[in-house]
Image (tube, rainbow, N blue to C red; front, side, top):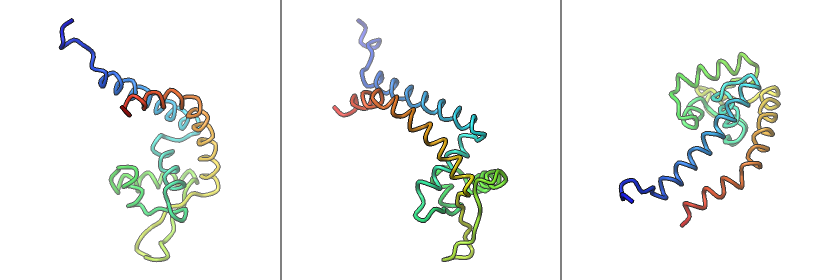
Length: 137
């Protein structure tokens, strides 16, 4: 067999892993859509709930986590606020900063989405673990 045509096991492992991740992301986007959210809106709610120290993040922190520009996150937060899922508040430690936190409706929407995602991850977890095992050796 021509060595150039031989399949590299690392390429195969990476391809399978990226395919599994993409399938999960497509699932996640569809679940967010069914809940009336975009994937970015879902990710923002998840970041605020899961990565904040006290239940709130600044716009800058949220931009860094989401790997988005500041002005894009301002627009994202505007849309989430219009949906009643987040609220802005002044940072008590620095009144110049704006913090964003989930509302009760935002927590409810995120909880429902998270339950759906956890069920999916439980279902695909063994396959993902097997794919990751290919990189441990």
